[in-house]
Image 1 (cartoon, rainbow over the protein chains, first blue to last red):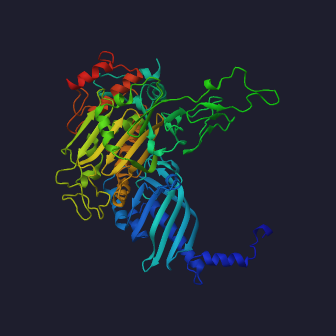
Image 2: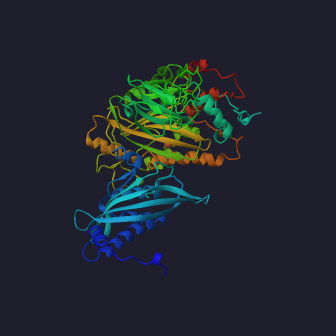
Image 3: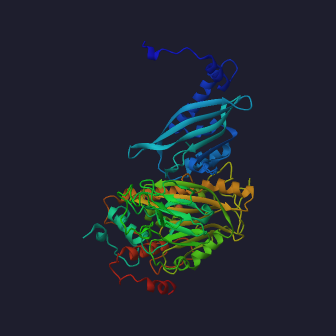
Length: 185
Length: 428
Ligand SMILES: [Fe+2]
Protein backbone atom coordinates (compact mmCIF):
# COMPACT_ATOMS: atom_id res chain seq x y z
CA UNK A 1 0.00 0.00 0.00
CA UNK A 2 1.41 3.36 -0.97
CA UNK A 3 1.74 6.18 1.53
CA UNK A 4 -0.97 8.11 -0.29
CA UNK A 5 -3.50 5.43 0.51
CA UNK A 6 -2.52 4.94 4.11
CA UNK A 7 -5.28 5.80 6.51
CA UNK A 8 -4.27 8.88 8.52
CA UNK A 9 -4.29 8.62 12.28
CA UNK A 10 -7.61 9.95 13.63
CA UNK A 11 -7.48 13.52 14.79
CA UNK A 12 -9.00 13.44 18.32
CA UNK A 13 -10.58 16.93 17.97
CA UNK A 14 -12.17 16.01 14.66
CA UNK A 15 -13.45 12.72 16.00
CA UNK A 16 -15.05 14.49 18.96
CA UNK A 17 -16.74 16.94 16.60
CA UNK A 18 -18.02 14.15 14.38
CA UNK A 19 -19.42 12.45 17.46
CA UNK A 20 -21.36 15.60 18.35
CA UNK A 21 -22.77 16.02 14.85
CA UNK A 22 -23.67 12.42 14.25
CA UNK A 23 -27.18 11.29 15.11
CA UNK A 24 -27.95 8.64 17.62
CA UNK A 25 -25.22 9.99 19.79
CA UNK A 26 -25.56 7.06 22.12
CA UNK A 27 -22.45 5.06 21.56
CA UNK A 28 -23.58 3.79 18.15
CA UNK A 29 -23.36 6.97 16.08
CA UNK A 30 -22.26 5.28 12.89
CA UNK A 31 -25.11 2.79 12.98
CA UNK A 32 -27.72 5.57 13.19
CA UNK A 33 -26.09 7.56 10.42
CA UNK A 34 -25.93 4.43 8.30
CA UNK A 35 -29.60 3.80 8.94
CA UNK A 36 -30.51 7.32 7.83
CA UNK A 37 -28.40 7.04 4.70
CA UNK A 38 -30.04 3.76 3.79
CA UNK A 39 -33.46 5.28 4.45
CA UNK A 40 -32.72 7.98 1.90
CA UNK A 41 -31.31 5.50 -0.61
CA UNK A 42 -34.42 3.32 -0.19
CA UNK A 43 -36.54 6.41 -0.83
CA UNK A 44 -34.75 7.04 -4.14
CA UNK A 45 -34.95 3.38 -5.14
CA UNK A 46 -38.68 3.31 -4.41
CA UNK A 47 -39.23 6.11 -6.92
CA UNK A 48 -36.73 4.68 -9.41
CA UNK A 49 -38.60 1.35 -9.30
CA UNK A 50 -41.94 3.11 -9.92
CA UNK A 51 -43.27 1.75 -6.62
CA UNK A 52 -45.24 4.95 -6.12
CA UNK A 53 -47.79 3.19 -3.92
CA UNK A 54 -45.00 2.62 -1.38
CA UNK A 55 -43.84 6.22 -1.47
CA UNK A 56 -46.27 7.69 1.13
CA UNK A 57 -45.09 5.15 3.71
CA UNK A 58 -41.76 6.99 3.84
CA UNK A 59 -43.68 9.83 5.50
CA UNK A 60 -45.30 10.24 8.89
CA UNK A 61 -49.05 10.81 9.00
CA UNK A 62 -48.52 14.58 9.02
CA UNK A 63 -45.33 14.49 7.00
CA UNK A 64 -45.12 17.14 4.28
CA UNK A 65 -43.49 17.05 0.89
CA UNK A 66 -42.63 20.11 -1.18
CA UNK A 67 -40.63 20.85 -4.30
CA UNK A 68 -39.41 24.45 -4.18
CA UNK A 69 -37.41 26.18 -6.89
CA UNK A 70 -34.27 27.60 -5.36
CA UNK A 71 -34.87 30.69 -7.50
CA UNK A 72 -37.83 31.44 -5.20
CA UNK A 73 -36.14 30.47 -1.96
CA UNK A 74 -33.17 32.74 -2.64
CA UNK A 75 -35.63 35.67 -2.75
CA UNK A 76 -37.25 34.63 0.50
CA UNK A 77 -40.27 33.06 -1.24
CA UNK A 78 -41.17 29.53 -0.28
CA UNK A 79 -43.67 29.02 -3.10
CA UNK A 80 -43.59 25.36 -4.09
CA UNK A 81 -44.40 23.75 -7.42
CA UNK A 82 -45.52 20.61 -5.61
CA UNK A 83 -47.10 21.12 -2.21
CA UNK A 84 -48.39 18.18 -0.21
CA UNK A 85 -49.16 18.62 3.47
CA UNK A 86 -49.75 15.11 4.76
CA UNK A 87 -49.69 11.43 3.87
CA UNK A 88 -53.26 11.49 2.55
CA UNK A 89 -52.32 14.15 0.04
CA UNK A 90 -49.29 12.09 -0.97
CA UNK A 91 -51.57 9.08 -1.53
CA UNK A 92 -53.96 11.23 -3.55
CA UNK A 93 -51.16 12.36 -5.84
CA UNK A 94 -50.26 8.75 -6.54
CA UNK A 95 -53.93 7.92 -7.15
CA UNK A 96 -54.29 10.76 -9.67
CA UNK A 97 -51.06 9.77 -11.43
CA UNK A 98 -52.25 6.18 -11.73
CA UNK A 99 -55.94 6.69 -12.49
CA UNK A 100 -56.40 10.01 -14.24
CA UNK A 101 -53.34 11.74 -15.57
CA UNK A 102 -52.30 11.90 -19.24
CA UNK A 103 -48.55 12.24 -19.19
CA UNK A 104 -45.40 10.63 -20.54
CA UNK A 105 -44.12 8.06 -18.05
CA UNK A 106 -40.38 8.16 -17.61
CA UNK A 107 -37.84 6.01 -15.87
CA UNK A 108 -36.09 7.92 -13.13
CA UNK A 109 -32.65 7.40 -11.67
CA UNK A 110 -31.86 9.20 -8.42
CA UNK A 111 -28.22 9.82 -7.58
CA UNK A 112 -28.22 10.81 -3.93
CA UNK A 113 -25.03 11.79 -2.16
CA UNK A 114 -23.27 14.17 0.18
CA UNK A 115 -25.66 13.06 2.89
CA UNK A 116 -25.36 14.85 6.18
CA UNK A 117 -27.52 14.13 9.19
CA UNK A 118 -27.64 15.79 12.55
CA UNK A 119 -29.44 15.16 15.76
CA UNK A 120 -32.53 17.38 15.79
CA UNK A 121 -33.79 19.42 18.70
CA UNK A 122 -35.93 16.52 19.99
CA UNK A 123 -34.51 13.11 20.64
CA UNK A 124 -35.40 10.65 17.93
CA UNK A 125 -35.53 13.43 15.33
CA UNK A 126 -32.86 14.06 12.77
CA UNK A 127 -32.21 16.83 10.30
CA UNK A 128 -31.03 15.57 7.01
CA UNK A 129 -29.49 17.17 3.98
CA UNK A 130 -28.36 15.51 0.79
CA UNK A 131 -27.49 16.43 -2.78
CA UNK A 132 -29.48 14.85 -5.53
CA UNK A 133 -29.42 14.54 -9.29
CA UNK A 134 -32.24 12.81 -11.10
CA UNK A 135 -31.85 11.42 -14.59
CA UNK A 136 -34.96 10.72 -16.62
CA UNK A 137 -35.23 8.27 -19.47
CA UNK A 138 -37.82 8.69 -22.19
CA UNK A 139 -39.21 5.20 -22.52
CA UNK A 140 -40.12 5.55 -26.22
CA UNK A 141 -37.04 7.42 -27.41
CA UNK A 142 -34.76 5.51 -25.06
CA UNK A 143 -32.68 8.58 -24.30
CA UNK A 144 -31.68 9.77 -20.84
CA UNK A 145 -31.01 13.27 -19.65
CA UNK A 146 -30.36 15.13 -16.46
CA UNK A 147 -33.86 15.95 -15.29
CA UNK A 148 -33.29 17.91 -12.11
CA UNK A 149 -30.51 18.85 -9.73
CA UNK A 150 -30.94 20.04 -6.20
CA UNK A 151 -30.87 19.10 -2.57
CA UNK A 152 -33.06 17.34 -0.06
CA UNK A 153 -33.72 19.17 3.15
CA UNK A 154 -35.73 17.10 5.55
CA UNK A 155 -36.58 16.03 9.02
CA UNK A 156 -36.78 12.37 9.95
CA UNK A 157 -38.41 10.87 13.01
CA UNK A 158 -37.46 7.50 14.43
CA UNK A 159 -40.45 5.73 15.94
CA UNK A 160 -42.02 2.31 16.25
CA UNK A 161 -42.58 2.19 12.46
CA UNK A 162 -38.90 2.84 11.81
CA UNK A 163 -37.77 6.05 10.14
CA UNK A 164 -40.26 8.46 8.58
CA UNK A 165 -40.06 11.92 7.12
CA UNK A 166 -41.95 14.50 9.13
CA UNK A 167 -40.92 16.94 6.41
CA UNK A 168 -39.12 16.59 3.11
CA UNK A 169 -38.32 19.55 0.87
CA UNK A 170 -36.61 19.16 -2.45
CA UNK A 171 -34.93 22.46 -3.24
CA UNK A 172 -34.40 22.53 -6.99
CA UNK A 173 -31.40 24.28 -8.51
CA UNK A 174 -33.08 23.48 -11.81
CA UNK A 175 -35.51 26.38 -11.93
CA UNK A 176 -36.67 25.88 -15.50
CA UNK A 177 -37.80 22.32 -15.13
CA UNK A 178 -38.93 19.65 -17.54
CA UNK A 179 -42.55 19.75 -18.78
CA UNK A 180 -43.31 16.50 -17.01
CA UNK A 181 -43.04 16.69 -13.24
CA UNK A 182 -46.11 14.79 -12.07
CA UNK A 183 -44.01 12.26 -10.20
CA UNK A 184 -42.48 13.14 -6.86
CA UNK A 185 -38.69 13.13 -6.85
CA UNK B 1 -39.88 29.38 -53.11
CA UNK B 2 -38.92 29.71 -49.45
CA UNK B 3 -40.03 26.88 -47.21
CA UNK B 4 -42.36 29.07 -45.13
CA UNK B 5 -44.18 30.08 -48.33
CA UNK B 6 -44.75 26.49 -49.36
CA UNK B 7 -47.09 25.99 -46.38
CA UNK B 8 -50.61 26.33 -47.68
CA UNK B 9 -53.76 27.62 -45.93
CA UNK B 10 -56.53 26.09 -48.02
CA UNK B 11 -59.51 27.60 -46.20
CA UNK B 12 -60.29 31.25 -45.43
CA UNK B 13 -62.33 30.10 -42.41
CA UNK B 14 -58.99 28.89 -40.96
CA UNK B 15 -60.35 25.42 -40.32
CA UNK B 16 -57.18 23.91 -41.85
CA UNK B 17 -53.72 24.52 -40.40
CA UNK B 18 -50.57 23.39 -42.21
CA UNK B 19 -48.54 21.10 -39.96
CA UNK B 20 -45.19 22.61 -40.98
CA UNK B 21 -46.16 25.73 -39.06
CA UNK B 22 -45.18 23.82 -35.90
CA UNK B 23 -41.76 22.58 -36.94
CA UNK B 24 -40.20 24.59 -39.77
CA UNK B 25 -37.21 26.66 -38.53
CA UNK B 26 -37.78 29.20 -41.28
CA UNK B 27 -41.31 29.83 -40.00
CA UNK B 28 -39.88 30.38 -36.54
CA UNK B 29 -37.39 32.96 -37.80
CA UNK B 30 -40.07 34.81 -39.71
CA UNK B 31 -42.27 34.87 -36.59
CA UNK B 32 -39.53 36.70 -34.72
CA UNK B 33 -39.52 39.52 -37.26
CA UNK B 34 -43.17 39.68 -38.26
CA UNK B 35 -44.83 38.90 -34.92
CA UNK B 36 -42.62 39.31 -31.88
CA UNK B 37 -40.79 42.33 -33.33
CA UNK B 38 -43.89 43.38 -35.22
CA UNK B 39 -46.97 45.47 -34.39
CA UNK B 40 -48.04 43.50 -31.29
CA UNK B 41 -47.83 44.24 -27.57
CA UNK B 42 -45.68 41.70 -25.70
CA UNK B 43 -46.42 40.95 -22.06
CA UNK B 44 -43.22 41.25 -20.05
CA UNK B 45 -44.14 41.10 -16.37
CA UNK B 46 -45.84 42.85 -13.50
CA UNK B 47 -45.07 46.28 -12.12
CA UNK B 48 -45.17 44.76 -8.63
CA UNK B 49 -41.87 43.05 -9.43
CA UNK B 50 -40.08 46.38 -9.78
CA UNK B 51 -41.69 48.71 -7.24
CA UNK B 52 -38.69 50.98 -6.61
CA UNK B 53 -36.57 53.12 -8.96
CA UNK B 54 -33.59 51.09 -10.17
CA UNK B 55 -35.45 47.77 -9.81
CA UNK B 56 -35.05 45.66 -12.92
CA UNK B 57 -35.63 42.20 -14.31
CA UNK B 58 -34.52 40.54 -17.51
CA UNK B 59 -36.87 38.71 -19.78
CA UNK B 60 -37.47 37.87 -23.44
CA UNK B 61 -39.55 39.30 -26.26
CA UNK B 62 -39.74 36.27 -28.53
CA UNK B 63 -36.12 35.13 -28.38
CA UNK B 64 -34.71 38.63 -27.89
CA UNK B 65 -33.26 39.34 -24.43
CA UNK B 66 -34.82 42.42 -22.83
CA UNK B 67 -34.28 44.53 -19.71
CA UNK B 68 -37.30 45.96 -17.91
CA UNK B 69 -36.56 48.60 -15.28
CA UNK B 70 -38.05 51.48 -13.36
CA UNK B 71 -36.24 54.80 -13.74
CA UNK B 72 -35.74 57.55 -11.14
CA UNK B 73 -38.96 59.24 -12.24
CA UNK B 74 -40.93 56.06 -11.55
CA UNK B 75 -41.52 55.29 -15.22
CA UNK B 76 -40.83 51.88 -16.69
CA UNK B 77 -38.38 51.52 -19.54
CA UNK B 78 -37.69 48.47 -21.67
CA UNK B 79 -34.69 47.99 -23.92
CA UNK B 80 -32.92 45.28 -25.85
CA UNK B 81 -30.26 43.79 -23.58
CA UNK B 82 -27.49 44.27 -26.10
CA UNK B 83 -24.64 46.76 -25.80
CA UNK B 84 -24.53 49.19 -28.70
CA UNK B 85 -20.73 48.93 -28.79
CA UNK B 86 -19.85 45.33 -29.62
CA UNK B 87 -23.16 43.68 -28.99
CA UNK B 88 -22.58 41.96 -25.65
CA UNK B 89 -25.30 41.19 -23.11
CA UNK B 90 -25.33 44.13 -20.67
CA UNK B 91 -27.47 42.91 -17.74
CA UNK B 92 -26.46 39.37 -16.88
CA UNK B 93 -28.72 38.32 -14.03
CA UNK B 94 -32.44 37.73 -13.51
CA UNK B 95 -33.28 40.73 -11.38
CA UNK B 96 -31.88 43.29 -8.99
CA UNK B 97 -31.55 46.98 -8.27
CA UNK B 98 -28.98 49.24 -9.96
CA UNK B 99 -28.68 52.92 -10.70
CA UNK B 100 -26.73 52.18 -13.90
CA UNK B 101 -26.26 49.21 -16.22
CA UNK B 102 -22.64 48.62 -17.15
CA UNK B 103 -21.54 46.27 -19.94
CA UNK B 104 -18.83 43.96 -18.60
CA UNK B 105 -16.97 43.76 -21.91
CA UNK B 106 -15.77 47.37 -22.37
CA UNK B 107 -17.62 49.01 -19.48
CA UNK B 108 -19.97 51.15 -21.51
CA UNK B 109 -22.42 52.55 -19.02
CA UNK B 110 -26.15 53.16 -19.51
CA UNK B 111 -28.68 54.94 -17.33
CA UNK B 112 -32.12 53.56 -16.44
CA UNK B 113 -33.63 54.98 -19.62
CA UNK B 114 -31.06 53.08 -21.70
CA UNK B 115 -29.07 56.19 -22.65
CA UNK B 116 -25.32 55.84 -22.94
CA UNK B 117 -23.74 57.90 -20.16
CA UNK B 118 -20.22 56.53 -19.87
CA UNK B 119 -17.52 55.32 -22.30
CA UNK B 120 -14.03 54.48 -20.99
CA UNK B 121 -10.92 55.72 -22.82
CA UNK B 122 -13.01 58.18 -24.76
CA UNK B 123 -9.98 60.35 -25.39
CA UNK B 124 -7.56 57.45 -25.40
CA UNK B 125 -4.66 56.78 -23.07
CA UNK B 126 -1.92 59.42 -23.04
CA UNK B 127 -3.31 60.84 -26.24
CA UNK B 128 -3.42 57.52 -28.08
CA UNK B 129 -6.47 55.58 -29.16
CA UNK B 130 -9.90 56.71 -28.00
CA UNK B 131 -13.17 57.22 -29.84
CA UNK B 132 -13.46 59.40 -32.95
CA UNK B 133 -13.85 63.16 -32.34
CA UNK B 134 -17.39 63.21 -33.71
CA UNK B 135 -18.59 60.36 -31.44
CA UNK B 136 -22.00 61.26 -30.02
CA UNK B 137 -23.23 59.20 -27.07
CA UNK B 138 -26.82 60.07 -27.93
CA UNK B 139 -26.57 57.89 -31.03
CA UNK B 140 -25.43 54.84 -29.06
CA UNK B 141 -28.12 54.10 -26.49
CA UNK B 142 -29.68 50.71 -25.89
CA UNK B 143 -32.48 49.99 -28.33
CA UNK B 144 -35.71 51.08 -26.61
CA UNK B 145 -39.13 49.48 -26.95
CA UNK B 146 -42.49 51.21 -26.61
CA UNK B 147 -43.87 50.58 -23.13
CA UNK B 148 -47.40 50.63 -21.75
CA UNK B 149 -49.01 49.18 -18.64
CA UNK B 150 -52.53 48.05 -18.03
CA UNK B 151 -53.55 47.53 -14.40
CA UNK B 152 -49.92 46.87 -13.45
CA UNK B 153 -49.24 44.44 -16.29
CA UNK B 154 -46.27 45.64 -18.34
CA UNK B 155 -46.37 45.40 -22.11
CA UNK B 156 -43.81 46.50 -24.70
CA UNK B 157 -43.67 46.70 -28.47
CA UNK B 158 -40.79 46.78 -30.93
CA UNK B 159 -43.05 48.74 -33.26
CA UNK B 160 -42.42 52.50 -32.84
CA UNK B 161 -46.10 53.22 -33.54
CA UNK B 162 -48.22 50.36 -32.18
CA UNK B 163 -51.96 50.76 -31.73
CA UNK B 164 -52.74 52.05 -28.20
CA UNK B 165 -52.58 49.19 -25.67
CA UNK B 166 -56.23 49.56 -24.50
CA UNK B 167 -57.37 49.24 -28.12
CA UNK B 168 -55.05 46.30 -28.72
CA UNK B 169 -56.62 44.54 -25.73
CA UNK B 170 -60.24 45.32 -26.54
CA UNK B 171 -63.17 45.66 -24.09
CA UNK B 172 -63.68 42.02 -22.96
CA UNK B 173 -59.96 41.62 -22.31
CA UNK B 174 -59.78 44.82 -20.32
CA UNK B 175 -62.74 43.68 -18.22
CA UNK B 176 -60.95 40.43 -17.42
CA UNK B 177 -57.79 42.29 -16.35
CA UNK B 178 -59.82 44.82 -14.34
CA UNK B 179 -61.25 41.93 -12.33
CA UNK B 180 -57.96 40.03 -11.93
CA UNK B 181 -56.04 43.15 -10.86
CA UNK B 182 -58.89 44.63 -8.83
CA UNK B 183 -56.61 45.51 -5.90
CA UNK B 184 -52.89 45.64 -5.01
CA UNK B 185 -51.13 42.35 -5.59
CA UNK B 186 -48.19 40.59 -4.01
CA UNK B 187 -45.89 38.27 -5.97
CA UNK B 188 -45.75 34.83 -4.33
CA UNK B 189 -43.20 33.17 -6.59
CA UNK B 190 -42.20 32.06 -10.04
CA UNK B 191 -42.38 28.66 -11.68
CA UNK B 192 -40.69 27.93 -14.96
CA UNK B 193 -40.77 24.95 -17.21
CA UNK B 194 -39.82 23.96 -20.72
CA UNK B 195 -42.04 22.24 -23.19
CA UNK B 196 -40.64 20.32 -26.13
CA UNK B 197 -43.30 21.63 -28.43
CA UNK B 198 -44.17 24.68 -30.51
CA UNK B 199 -45.43 27.83 -28.78
CA UNK B 200 -48.42 28.05 -31.12
CA UNK B 201 -49.66 24.60 -30.15
CA UNK B 202 -49.83 25.95 -26.62
CA UNK B 203 -51.85 28.94 -27.83
CA UNK B 204 -54.22 26.63 -29.67
CA UNK B 205 -54.68 24.79 -26.37
CA UNK B 206 -55.45 27.99 -24.46
CA UNK B 207 -58.07 29.06 -27.01
CA UNK B 208 -59.78 25.68 -27.16
CA UNK B 209 -62.36 25.04 -24.44
CA UNK B 210 -63.60 21.74 -25.81
CA UNK B 211 -60.49 19.83 -24.76
CA UNK B 212 -61.09 20.75 -21.12
CA UNK B 213 -63.59 17.95 -20.52
CA UNK B 214 -61.82 15.49 -22.84
CA UNK B 215 -58.07 15.69 -22.18
CA UNK B 216 -58.41 16.66 -18.53
CA UNK B 217 -60.03 13.62 -16.91
CA UNK B 218 -59.46 14.51 -13.27
CA UNK B 219 -61.91 17.44 -13.05
CA UNK B 220 -64.52 15.23 -14.73
CA UNK B 221 -63.83 12.28 -12.42
CA UNK B 222 -64.10 14.58 -9.40
CA UNK B 223 -67.40 15.98 -10.63
CA UNK B 224 -65.89 19.46 -11.00
CA UNK B 225 -66.47 19.76 -14.73
CA UNK B 226 -69.36 19.27 -17.05
CA UNK B 227 -69.69 20.55 -20.60
CA UNK B 228 -73.12 21.99 -19.77
CA UNK B 229 -71.98 24.29 -16.99
CA UNK B 230 -72.35 28.01 -17.44
CA UNK B 231 -69.48 29.53 -19.35
CA UNK B 232 -68.57 31.45 -22.47
CA UNK B 233 -65.76 32.57 -24.73
CA UNK B 234 -65.33 36.17 -25.76
CA UNK B 235 -62.91 37.65 -28.24
CA UNK B 236 -61.68 41.12 -29.07
CA UNK B 237 -63.07 42.76 -32.24
CA UNK B 238 -60.27 41.20 -34.33
CA UNK B 239 -60.71 37.74 -32.81
CA UNK B 240 -57.02 37.40 -31.95
CA UNK B 241 -57.36 37.11 -28.15
CA UNK B 242 -59.69 34.87 -26.18
CA UNK B 243 -61.35 35.25 -22.82
CA UNK B 244 -62.83 32.12 -21.38
CA UNK B 245 -64.76 31.69 -18.16
CA UNK B 246 -66.68 29.01 -16.31
CA UNK B 247 -69.02 29.51 -13.37
CA UNK B 248 -69.59 27.34 -10.35
CA UNK B 249 -72.98 25.65 -10.26
CA UNK B 250 -75.58 27.51 -8.23
CA UNK B 251 -75.41 24.84 -5.53
CA UNK B 252 -71.68 25.45 -5.18
CA UNK B 253 -70.84 21.78 -5.55
CA UNK B 254 -67.33 22.76 -6.56
CA UNK B 255 -66.87 25.05 -3.61
CA UNK B 256 -66.19 22.39 -1.08
CA UNK B 257 -65.21 22.88 2.47
CA UNK B 258 -63.04 20.32 4.23
CA UNK B 259 -64.85 17.03 4.52
CA UNK B 260 -67.48 17.95 1.94
CA UNK B 261 -67.39 15.80 -1.13
CA UNK B 262 -69.43 15.98 -4.31
CA UNK B 263 -71.57 12.99 -5.06
CA UNK B 264 -70.89 10.71 -7.98
CA UNK B 265 -67.13 10.98 -7.90
CA UNK B 266 -65.32 8.42 -10.03
CA UNK B 267 -62.20 9.02 -8.00
CA UNK B 268 -62.21 9.22 -4.21
CA UNK B 269 -59.59 11.51 -2.78
CA UNK B 270 -58.59 11.26 0.86
CA UNK B 271 -57.94 14.99 1.21
CA UNK B 272 -59.78 17.68 -0.76
CA UNK B 273 -57.62 20.58 0.38
CA UNK B 274 -56.59 21.58 -3.15
CA UNK B 275 -60.21 21.64 -4.34
CA UNK B 276 -61.35 23.82 -1.46
CA UNK B 277 -61.99 27.28 -2.92
CA UNK B 278 -63.36 30.66 -2.02
CA UNK B 279 -65.54 32.85 -4.27
CA UNK B 280 -63.38 35.96 -3.83
CA UNK B 281 -65.25 38.11 -6.33
CA UNK B 282 -68.78 37.02 -5.44
CA UNK B 283 -69.55 36.23 -9.10
CA UNK B 284 -69.33 32.41 -9.03
CA UNK B 285 -66.57 32.47 -11.68
CA UNK B 286 -64.44 29.40 -10.98
CA UNK B 287 -62.10 29.70 -13.95
CA UNK B 288 -61.28 32.89 -15.79
CA UNK B 289 -58.54 32.80 -18.39
CA UNK B 290 -57.34 35.28 -20.97
CA UNK B 291 -54.97 34.43 -23.78
CA UNK B 292 -53.50 37.53 -25.36
CA UNK B 293 -51.78 37.31 -28.70
CA UNK B 294 -48.89 36.50 -28.88
CA UNK B 295 -47.24 35.63 -25.58
CA UNK B 296 -49.33 35.52 -22.44
CA UNK B 297 -52.13 33.89 -20.53
CA UNK B 298 -53.67 35.51 -17.46
CA UNK B 299 -55.63 33.13 -15.28
CA UNK B 300 -57.71 32.72 -12.20
CA UNK B 301 -58.32 29.05 -11.53
CA UNK B 302 -60.23 28.83 -8.25
CA UNK B 303 -57.97 31.05 -6.13
CA UNK B 304 -54.80 30.35 -8.09
CA UNK B 305 -53.82 33.63 -9.76
CA UNK B 306 -51.13 33.68 -12.41
CA UNK B 307 -49.60 35.27 -15.43
CA UNK B 308 -48.01 32.83 -17.80
CA UNK B 309 -45.50 34.31 -20.22
CA UNK B 310 -44.70 32.21 -23.28
CA UNK B 311 -41.07 32.34 -24.32
CA UNK B 312 -40.36 30.63 -27.64
CA UNK B 313 -36.87 29.14 -27.81
CA UNK B 314 -37.00 27.41 -31.19
CA UNK B 315 -39.62 25.87 -33.46
CA UNK B 316 -39.51 22.85 -31.17
CA UNK B 317 -39.22 24.35 -27.70
CA UNK B 318 -40.68 27.06 -25.51
CA UNK B 319 -40.45 28.06 -21.89
CA UNK B 320 -43.39 29.04 -19.71
CA UNK B 321 -42.76 31.52 -16.93
CA UNK B 322 -45.57 31.35 -14.41
CA UNK B 323 -45.78 34.25 -11.98
CA UNK B 324 -48.00 33.41 -9.03
CA UNK B 325 -49.56 36.25 -7.09
CA UNK B 326 -52.07 36.98 -4.40
CA UNK B 327 -53.58 40.19 -3.09
CA UNK B 328 -51.84 42.32 -0.50
CA UNK B 329 -54.83 41.94 1.84
CA UNK B 330 -54.98 38.11 1.69
CA UNK B 331 -55.66 36.40 4.99
CA UNK B 332 -53.41 33.42 5.87
CA UNK B 333 -56.08 30.87 4.90
CA UNK B 334 -56.38 32.34 1.45
CA UNK B 335 -52.61 32.36 1.00
CA UNK B 336 -52.50 28.68 1.94
CA UNK B 337 -55.32 27.96 -0.54
CA UNK B 338 -53.40 29.64 -3.35
CA UNK B 339 -50.37 27.50 -2.60
CA UNK B 340 -52.41 24.28 -2.42
CA UNK B 341 -54.06 24.99 -5.75
CA UNK B 342 -50.70 24.74 -7.51
CA UNK B 343 -51.95 21.15 -7.78
CA UNK B 344 -53.81 22.26 -10.93
CA UNK B 345 -51.29 24.32 -12.91
CA UNK B 346 -47.57 24.75 -13.39
CA UNK B 347 -45.00 22.04 -14.12
CA UNK B 348 -46.47 19.57 -11.62
CA UNK B 349 -50.11 20.63 -11.99
CA UNK B 350 -52.67 18.02 -12.97
CA UNK B 351 -54.10 20.18 -15.76
CA UNK B 352 -50.85 21.92 -16.71
CA UNK B 353 -49.05 18.64 -17.26
CA UNK B 354 -51.70 17.44 -19.66
CA UNK B 355 -51.67 20.65 -21.68
CA UNK B 356 -47.90 20.37 -21.97
CA UNK B 357 -48.27 16.77 -23.03
CA UNK B 358 -50.75 17.77 -25.78
CA UNK B 359 -48.19 20.26 -27.11
CA UNK B 360 -45.54 17.59 -27.24
CA UNK B 361 -47.86 15.06 -28.92
CA UNK B 362 -48.44 17.53 -31.76
CA UNK B 363 -44.72 18.13 -32.02
CA UNK B 364 -43.85 14.46 -32.30
CA UNK B 365 -46.51 13.80 -34.94
CA UNK B 366 -45.57 16.81 -37.08
CA UNK B 367 -42.14 15.67 -38.20
CA UNK B 368 -42.03 14.89 -41.88
CA UNK B 369 -45.64 16.04 -42.25
CA UNK B 370 -45.17 19.73 -43.04
CA UNK B 371 -47.71 19.66 -45.86
CA UNK B 372 -50.43 17.82 -43.95
CA UNK B 373 -53.25 19.83 -42.34
CA UNK B 374 -55.03 19.70 -39.01
CA UNK B 375 -58.76 20.39 -38.80
CA UNK B 376 -60.57 22.88 -36.55
CA UNK B 377 -64.35 22.64 -36.74
CA UNK B 378 -66.05 22.52 -33.32
CA UNK B 379 -68.43 25.42 -32.89
CA UNK B 380 -68.75 25.55 -36.67
CA UNK B 381 -66.59 27.30 -39.25
CA UNK B 382 -68.70 30.44 -39.48
CA UNK B 383 -67.75 33.96 -38.36
CA UNK B 384 -65.07 34.21 -35.69
CA UNK B 385 -66.53 35.77 -32.58
CA UNK B 386 -68.02 35.07 -29.16
CA UNK B 387 -69.68 31.79 -28.18
CA UNK B 388 -72.04 31.32 -25.26
CA UNK B 389 -71.02 27.71 -24.72
CA UNK B 390 -67.81 25.73 -24.19
CA UNK B 391 -68.03 23.14 -26.98
CA UNK B 392 -65.98 25.29 -29.27
CA UNK B 393 -62.63 25.87 -30.93
CA UNK B 394 -63.75 29.02 -32.75
CA UNK B 395 -61.18 31.23 -31.06
CA UNK B 396 -58.41 28.88 -32.23
CA UNK B 397 -59.36 29.93 -35.76
CA UNK B 398 -59.24 33.55 -34.60
CA UNK B 399 -55.67 33.07 -33.41
CA UNK B 400 -54.63 31.63 -36.77
CA UNK B 401 -56.33 34.34 -38.80
CA UNK B 402 -54.41 37.14 -37.09
CA UNK B 403 -51.23 35.04 -37.19
CA UNK B 404 -51.59 34.63 -40.97
CA UNK B 405 -52.25 38.32 -41.42
CA UNK B 406 -49.01 39.24 -39.61
CA UNK B 407 -46.97 36.50 -41.28
CA UNK B 408 -48.11 37.42 -44.77
CA UNK B 409 -49.98 34.18 -45.42
CA UNK B 410 -53.07 34.30 -47.63
CA UNK B 411 -55.73 31.59 -47.58
CA UNK B 412 -56.20 29.98 -50.99
CA UNK B 413 -59.97 30.35 -51.28
CA UNK B 414 -60.75 33.90 -50.25
CA UNK B 415 -59.96 37.60 -50.74
CA UNK B 416 -56.78 39.07 -49.21
CA UNK B 417 -56.91 39.24 -45.42
CA UNK B 418 -58.21 42.61 -44.27
CA UNK B 419 -58.64 43.12 -40.49
CA UNK B 420 -60.81 46.17 -41.21
CA UNK B 421 -63.64 43.81 -42.21
CA UNK B 422 -63.30 41.34 -39.32
CA UNK B 423 -65.22 43.18 -36.60
CA UNK B 424 -68.26 43.59 -38.87
CA UNK B 425 -68.15 39.87 -39.80
CA UNK B 426 -68.09 38.83 -36.15
CA UNK B 427 -71.40 40.53 -35.30
CA UNK B 428 -73.20 39.69 -38.56
FE1 LIG C 1 -56.12 22.38 -20.95
